[in-house]
Length: 631
Image (cartoon, rainbow, N blue to C red; front, side, top):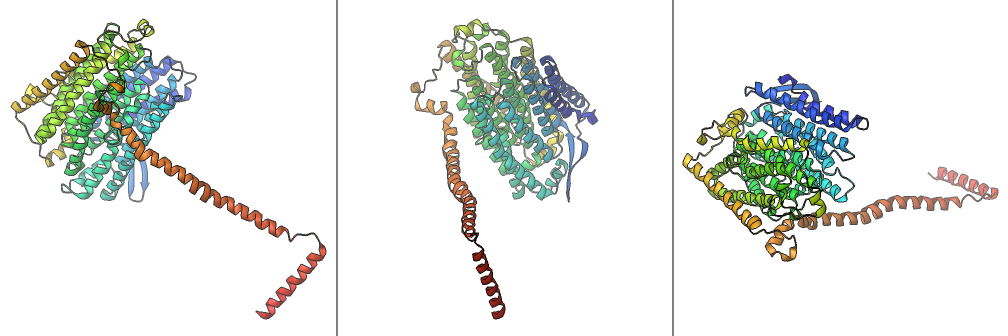
């Protein structure tokens, strides 16, 4: 089956081409079947390969791609445990989002174009995770950036949505510059960009080598942009401008996890660079806390989930920064389940509320949207880290590794985990509990979403509940199945790193504290928003200075605008005046004016009188004769 792995990315690409070329002649039903069916086909092939995999890595070479001098880059795929996990997540969750989109976007006049973009996005994401070298990865990396631009700005008639798409595209280019510089340094250092040659060559370096540190730092800049870490995170909340299925696809299972996958794939390089790992750890921890605090005061249902995504990505980087690569991938996987469910559940709410996204204007929806209510509750419990839901197992593993690394840093991560439980249940209670706060028109049209939308929600709900059992720790009688499956990928790093071990009693204590703190957060949210029936006003005049600061997202966007955007605009305006108009235009127009003036002077010699011409000829002959005699 491994030889058929090339079909995994090709099927979504074929779906994109078929829909894009024949969009006008294909009925919507067939468009939905093609778009969803191609991704389902990729998922089936990925499952077949997964079931036959024995832990070994297989390279599937398609053709020689780039060949110049000593540079030889094949277009080839790497099928190993890590890529298989990512393939199952991308195609599995991607298929469910495609099915959901058939219902959610069915009334859009550009439905076919939307579905084709989704297929193209999946194709590039599959290239990213399947490539056997950094150039194929970079091709997919840039491809998902392009598709995110198209999908975020899909409703392009809205200027704000266009600005959000441009913001995402431009901020990702900043990170991508670091990524490509890192790849160039890899080529200069190892003479190759193929994973096998780079990683085997890296084993000859000592820990702390400056070149390896430079490579890993540059690659991480790319991850900061793609995975929305401080300071390159501000594009992701604005990306909520896209249709809700886009939010689920980009911000749950695929694009934003690309940076996590890249570091996990390059694990031996990062293990050899403790300084970069520490930097990754502190950036992840800072992002987790920072984004969680912002989520406390957001009232847009999708914005809350967006900042939650930024925070949860921070947890993944915390895991990577401590060298717990399996824990990072584990949380990536469970997060894909419950965050995709949360976004799609939010889409079901928005669909029922006729486009309303402000949770201040919701409430009491559990009576009208019973399926959405139940699945949203399950996802909220999962992300809050309550056992035995998936988020509990993956987040507990991260916290345990961090405690072994530094109890102080564990305390900060625990705070971020508490905030997660609070703002997520705040969102849940304000949306589904209490009395309805919307308009009479919205109340009259409240309805549960159709089966084509709720069926993917129910599947994701099952995964959100049971997904954590894929890596049950030994303390619960598990065998760490995911860790054992991924061990061949991280074997070289495990041999070179010291993984501090904590005893079972300590681990139980840490679990109890984390669950207890989450329980307290949930109780506080219930007391405030259900028992006391408090509804945020959203009026800044009623807020304290601290609440206003957090409500306005610490004015980071305004700071970027003042420190970067406005100075660049000023430089651009001055450059237009002095360089474009005065220097360039002045030079061009000046040369034209000089030519016209000179032509006007020379034109006076053309008098039209024969006598003048004869005198001029005689004088010219005399001048030539005199010059010949004298010189």
